[in-house]
Every structure is written in C-alpha cells, then in structure tokens.
Image (cartoon, rainbow, N blue to C red):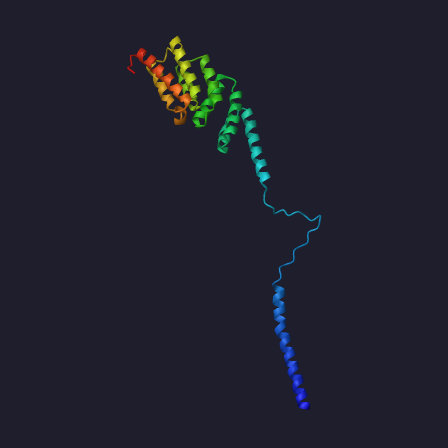
Length: 228
C-alpha cells in the first residue's frame, strides 16, 4: 500500500514538471508576437517633422515663380519670356509678352524684342504683331516691310495678315515702297502666307485672305509683266 502511494506521488510530480516546461515556451512565444507599444502622444506633443510636403506648398512655389517672372518682364528682362514659355501656360506667356511689349517704348526696343522672339523661336501673339505693324507704318521700307509681313504671319491670324498685305499694297501704290519691285512684293505675300497654319489658311478669314492675295497677284503681276 505504501509502495503504491509513493508511486502515485512520483507520477503526479513528473506530470506536473512536464506540464510546466511544455507551457512555458508557448507563453513566451505569444508574448513575443505582440506588436510594440506606441509612444503616447499628449495634447502638447512635438509635431512629427517627417510629414511630406503638402500640395499647397507646391502651389505657393509656382505662384512665387510666376510673380518673379512678371516682375522681370515689367523691368524689361526678355529672359522672362523664355522661362514663361517653359511653363506651358499660353495665357501666362501672353501676359509676360504683353508686359514686354508695353515696356518697349521705342521702335528700337520693339525691334530688339521681335528679334529675341524670332531668334528663340517663341510664339508671336496679336499684340506684338499689331504693335510692330503700327511701328512699320510710320516708316515703311524694304527691310521693315519684310519683317512686318513675317511677324504678322507668325501671329497665325488671317485677318491680321490681310491687314498687313493691304497696307503694303497701299504703300507700294503710293510709291512709299519704291525700293521693292512688284515681283519681290508678290513673292513676300505668297511666301509668308504659307507660314500661317493650315487651320488658319482654311478658316473663313483665311478664305477672305486668299481672295485678297489673288487680287494682289493680278495687280502686281500685270505691273511686273508676270502672267498670273
């Protein structure tokens, strides 16, 4: 009886030890799987300085850049026009160009602006072309007539180019363009016409322009003895 009792106690003790060692690693594993504790943030905690830049900051930077370009244009700095073109905003580009035209108070300054635009192959708007036509009309000659017709064509406006053609014809009739032969003037008209875009040439205003050019060809051709 004593032997049976001792045997039972030993078996129970062995089982207790075995259960202890079996349960211990399981408990440790579960504890390791828990996520790390987050640091508490109080009402007056320091802000997180790693936040990415907001879209508002990018917009502010773009607005600052545009403001600087406007200031440069108001000061007559033609490089503002090149930078405005890079932005790809035609309305803003026209705004900068118009400021430069406004600040070109002499014919020489205007011709310098036109030269810059042509040299860098920048767009010509109606304001620049119209202002140059006004300058040309004050003293038309062979060289200025060629420039005026070219810039008017670069503006890609059929009505504006028609105005330039009609003015040149009028000056030629009055003898103000005596240094240009009828054949040369006709070649200028036709050559610059093809500078206009196909869309402009095929528009309603383009159709009226073609009629004006056809009449000019007949008049200049008859004078020069060219069969049209």
